[in-house]
Image 1 (cartoon, rainbow, N blue to C red):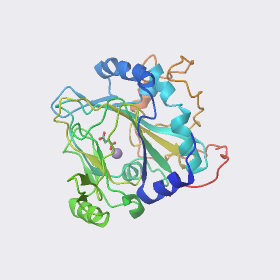
Image 2 (image 1 turned 135 degrees about the horizontal axis):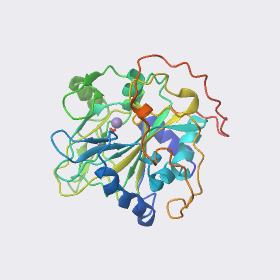
Image 3 (image 1 turned 120 degrees about the vertical axis):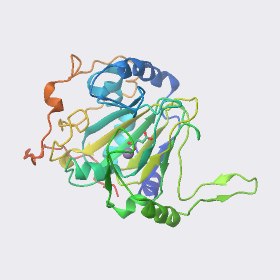
Image 4 (image 1 turned 90 degrees about the vertical axis):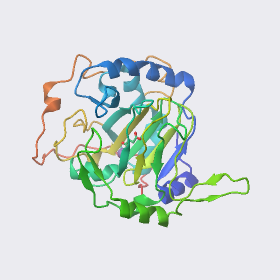
Length: 313
Ligand code: SIN
Ligand code: MN
């Protein structure tokens, strides 16, 4: 799948692109079915909600589960990001966020690149977030909220929040959020039928199989899920190979250390059982838990240039 000129322009302006129902129900079913068993594992890569057994985030499923290993190589997801960066990509992070019915907690306002820069020493923002909905996302089950255009601010000063939720995050303070939302159009308006027309905060909602691409500097958050509907979504972070991280301060199951370019499978890979490697299929190696504050002097991996050399904003 390639992006049109209009989609590129929209991505540059707003910082995200939404593709409702990009994947079919049949394509999502093996992924959806694999989640309960992954979440049941008592492993470091399952981070549970504060004070609850519900899984908030499962990391690195693409290294232990065949359906997710195939999703990680899906051309419908990888190709548009390669086009935007003009370079091959590696998987920086792979999460299945639960946001389970009644239990899913908030994600505070943040930029993902803030964390990747501060913790992982990722040199620039040439990494893309991709969200793929495994459940339907509606206004009640804690959809993502974006501030359109906020990626244009670049990297914003952030505070390392270690207490609000079970997962540490570099968060943006409320005064700046207020300003950014105001600048993007505030609370929005109402049309003649009384329907809300969003402006400064938008929430893409849609059926399972929908996909969002969003800029790593786009400011985003989500509220808790008080509804009876699970909101399981996969978040993949695809990084330009030359922009690989320079420090392993976080465990490898969170911030990956294998910068090999992703080799895509055919487009029907979610309904056909193409063989895939599962490097952690027999268990996560102990080294994946090791961390260090040293700057790693990897020789820059060779990245094969991609046909389109256009760069993302
Ligand atoms: C994230 O920002 O990484 C996750 C947000 C969410 O799952 O709502
Ligand atoms: Mn995020």
